[in-house]
Image (tube, rainbow, N blue to C red):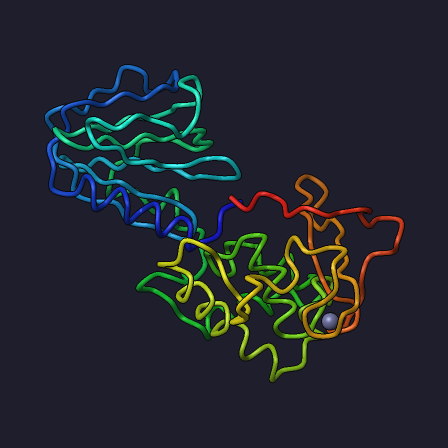
Length: 280
Ligand SMILES: [Zn+2]
C-alpha cells in the first residue's frame, strides 16, 4: 500500500505534466472504459486525496485512480522509452504534444462526474497532506474505537488519510507503543501528539526521493524492514509479524524493548526476515 507522500508525488508529477494541456491521446485499457476517448479535452489538473488520485478534465469529468500495492503513474517525454513495466500492465495513457502519462497496474480506475467525487473519497478522514487537515478530528477518529489495535486504527483511511504500512510501524515506534496496543490504552499525552507527528513525517518526506523517519545519517527507518537487525536505539533485535483483519495481513515491525504493549505470540511471527518488503 503506498504512503500518502508517494501518492502526493504522483499527483504532482501528473499535474505538472498535464494541467492546462490538451490531450492528443487517451487510452484506457480496462473493459468498462475501453471506448472512452478524451482527445481534444483539456486536463484541469490532478489532486491527491489521501491515497486517491483525482484527475479532472474540462466538461466536469474526473478520472479516479488508486495505486494500491503495485500501481504507479509515470510521465515520459516524447522521445523517452517507457520503462514502468511491460505493456500488458498498462491501464491508462494520457498524452499531450510533448508529455505522456502512463498508469501501470492501477487497481482502481473509474470515471466520475467531478461533482460526484465524494462518492469515491467522501469516506476519508482528514487528509494528512490536504487542505482539510484537522488534527483534533483525526485524534477523535483514532480513539473512537478504544479496543482497536493502534496499528489498525492508523491504517484505517476513514480515521485519517495518508498512512501506509511503513509509517504505521514507524509511528508506533516513535511514540513507544506496539501496533497491538488498544488505542484506548495509549497514554493521553502520547495520543495527543500522534496526528501532528504523522503529519510532520509525511510533510518532511513529500519532496524526498527516499523516505526517512530517523534523522540519522546511516539509517532511513527505525524498524520497518529491519527485522531481525538490532534496534537503532537499544540494540534489541527488531521483530516482525503480520497484522490485519484476516483478509489483508501486513508485515508489521517493532522493537519489543522500546515499545510497550501487547504483541503477537512467537508462533505468529515471521522468521528469518532479512530484506525490506516493497513499500509501494
Ligand atoms: Zn529498541
